[in-house]
Structure formats: C-alpha cells, structure tokens
Amino acid sequence: MVTVHVGMDDTDSPRTGCTTYVASLLVEKLHNIGVSFVDYPNLVRLNPNVPWKTRGNGSLSLRFKCDEDQVEEIKEIVVDVVEKNSDLEYSGTEPGVVFFAGKIIPEELAAFAEQAIQGIVKLKDAMRLVESFKAEAIGFKSGRGIIGALAAVGETLAGDHTYELITYRTRANRGTERLVDAESVFKMNEETQPLTFNNVDRETKRILIAPRGPDPILYGIRGQTPSIVRKAHSMVHSFEPVERWTIFRTNHGTDAHLGKAASIREIRAYHPVVVEGKVAKPPRIIPRRHVVFAISDAAGQVDCAAYEPTGDLRKRAAELIVGDVVEAYGGVRPASDRRPATINLEKLRVIALAKKLLFSNPVCPECGRRMESMGAGKGFRCDRCGFRSDEIKKQAVEVRRNLKEMLYVTSPRSQRHLTKPLSRYGFEKKGKPDRLISSWFWVNDKLK
Image (tube, rainbow, N blue to C red; front, side, top):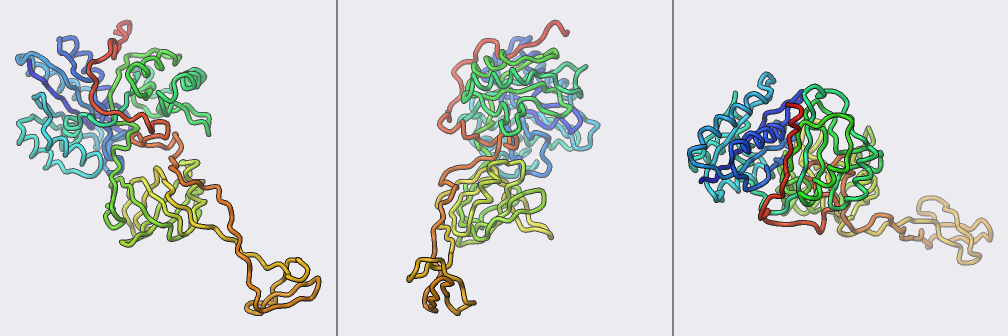
C-alpha cells in the first residue's frame, strides 16, 4: 500500500465550473475502485489578493492509501475527470494537477503552501519542488494551476481548520435561480450556531450559504466538525434535487492568510497583513459611502479603507480620531497614479483610544452664564452681567466615545472565505482527525 496525495486547481471560470465539484466527482470514482481515504478532501483557500486568482481561489487535495499497482490507473482517472470538467475554452482557466506519494509531506512543500496562502509564489518555484521531491505535475495550457495544486498537497491543515459540507446541483438546474428554503436556513442557523457560522446576514436578512453564480454549488454549510455540518445539512430544505454532497476539511474561517508585519514599511502589495499604527489622518467619506483613514508608525504611513459592504466595520472606522492606536487586518492594494497603497480592511482591532475633547466658551465667573467671544484673541464677555476678560480660555470637555477597545470584524456578507468570524474565537483547534465519520459524502443514484 502507498499513500498518495493528489492536488488540483484552476478548473473553473467566471462562467462555469468549480474545483470542489471536480474533487467530489473523484471521491466517488476513487471510492468505487477501493482506495482508503486518510483525510477528508482538503479545500485550501489561497491568498485572496493576488490579481490572477480563480473565482474562489480554492485549491483541492485528496489523500488516500491504495495498492501500488493502482497508481497509474488513478492518475488516468484524475486527469480525465479534470480535463472533462474544466472550462478549457476560457482564456484564464489553466488547470494543474500534482501527484505526490509518501506518508510525510516535506517541510519545503509545507513552506511553499504557506507562502501561497499568505503571499505570492511562482510557477518555476513550484516546478523546482515537484522535480526535487519526485512528484508529478500535469498542466493544461500554461499550467498555472500547478501552483495551487502543489500548495494543496503541501497544506495539511495541521493547524486551525474548519469543515464545509457542499451540495451540488443537477446539470439541468445550473445557471438558474437556486431554490433553497430561506426559512429553513434561518432555523438551522439558530439551532446550530456557533458550531456553524456565516449561514445568514442579519443586517440584510439574506441567507449566505447559497452562492449566486453559474457554478454547480447549490449551497455550502461551514462549521466546527463534520458531524455538525452534516446535521445542519439535514435541516436545510431545497426545492430542487441535489446531485451529490461532500464534506471538506478546510482553512475557511481561520485567518490563515494574515501575516503579522513588524512595521508599515514591511507591508507589500497583494499580501494580506496585520499591522499596528496610530491614526494619523481622520476618517473621510468617499463616494459610495466608503471610509478611508491613515495610520502611521515610526517607519511610514498607509491608508486603510472600510468599504460600504463591510457594514458595522465601516461605521466603527468612521468613529476613529487622530491618536487612536489600532491594528489593521486586510489585503494590501498597490499604489497607483490616483491613490496610495491601501489596506482593504477585513478587521480592525482598537488597541487604545485617544481622548476626544470638545472646546466650549467659558462660564462667567460672576453669574454663571455661558460667555460670548469678543473675537480671535480678544477674550470673552458676559451678555448678562457685562463681565469681560481676555485671560479666560475656552474650556475642554472630554466626550464619551461609543468606540470600544476591541476587535471589529466586517459583516458576514462581505467576509472572505479565510476571514475568521468573531464566533470562531475560542474554537480554534489543531491536528488532523483520527478517523473519518461514516457517510461523509453522498451521491444521488436516482439521477444516474
């Protein structure tokens, strides 16, 4: 018996397809020939800020044991399924598949995966590692998908992870409006949270488990354990048939993409970052109700933007004042001729609040009435009793602020796949599961 890891990426396009669906098809086919899965399919979201990312920027890996004489047959099955279910006619779709045999993932592959999640990697570096560790890579067209495929092999999700049960539509229904019973989703959310997350957006009363694009996904439920997402799935009602569903283990909701920068000088374009600074310029509202402010430290200054869809995060960002100490979480948009480099906020931690002072005219020491200014630098007079003074100054009053020293997170509807929601803090975990639950995937045999 040998342990085989199969990575794949970049099979979809904006108009069709989904790499998780390709993985789900392969789970069925490989199960039918007798492989023994050692993990749930791994869904690894990569750096969401790279300009050439796929629609969801998710890569997949399958890990299983099989007889050594089955390996060549398995490779043929994988390549055939990837080719038949990739949108190869779309110019930006460039699938890649990687095969690696071995119980232990080399540290160099794990480091490559971490860089693919938190930064930018190149195809030549992926190919060098493929050759160095005697893996096998198959690329279609330019083969750029080999990068994500190798990263999916290298990321074993040994750190914090979550699960997602994804259901898929029949081919006949793809591209049409999804018929998911919203009431059942809200009920499921009430009964399973916080063990499931990002099911609904309370501000807009929208369900979030069902995407809106032409891909084959009907809905996906994210949660802490395989059992809870399967239970939640059983509570959701849809008015269209489900072709199949599969449980994935994933880095969704873990903040795996965010790397801490020691100073503003260290941040780089397209990299997700966490950086501390002091508010240097007060928030301003730009068209479409986006909020922009600047933070600085001893090394430099950078703009931060909370866009309108971020909801409460945008409102809180608007309450900042110069002198507040904050930690900004988000992807770095590069500078252009029209604007400086900007951190697109996913989260904002308020570390220390500056005092907010309002200055008002002094109270008359003779009669207690509020005095009036006699002009800049000329002092104040009391209209009631006539008292005048050029020595009395305006009085400073500290204003109580609604902003708290805490972490603020963007609204669920605008959270990236990787963003850890507030409900997950305290639920972090490590290590792969000892065994897989029974019935972690299902295929509707009636539709065959």
